[in-house]
Length: 302
Image (cartoon, rainbow, N blue to C red; front, side, top):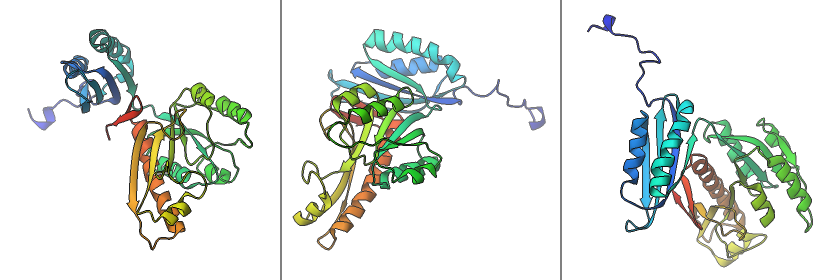
């Protein structure tokens, strides 16, 4: 056949499995045949596997975790049939749990911030550059200082004061703003403690960032305290928020070396750099369904 005789490529003749992409997250007790069951269902539907990562903490009866990304033409129309097949193969046959999500629909992230804006502005900039596959319906702060910076990105800003020991009024307003509008919350150096009731009622994952000195150097001025102790590493930790303060499942951590010549201000500046990088990676991995929670730890397919 000559080039002139070749049939044009149309939507109807395009190879299957090259359309919208979806993520499939599977977890539960390990067993023989789980991967084959997943690939069999996807093959039956004409899906093309883009990536497949799996982990078992003990092949002899341990826990199994898998993240699969696949492409499929007409994904939205085929999702109900895919779920029905996965219910049959994964839930009924193996007793596993799974989530199936169209990756073309970005997760909605509300960002909470206080006066310190380095993590907040970094997330907003990365979002504007297309580096984070999320939408940001709102930024909420207990101070008005960052309002103009946030609005310059075209993001709605809400000032919700939170003063004194009783945070109930502020948290009630937070819950009103969040209700049905977000898929997760990011605490971008939000310097308020969330109550257990708020965490439960919010009903969505909450990601926090803090310096990695904890449990040492608790409270104000951690970098000055670190300087006094002569620390040699400055770092940051991003984790999911639980009722136990700063003890939730860790998503990402990183450190940089410092020396005796660094001032407390130098430590704070370098710590802020690490906080930005760690938090942005944690948000990215969560938004791409790369993090699977298992008890108080995580499996991260980064």
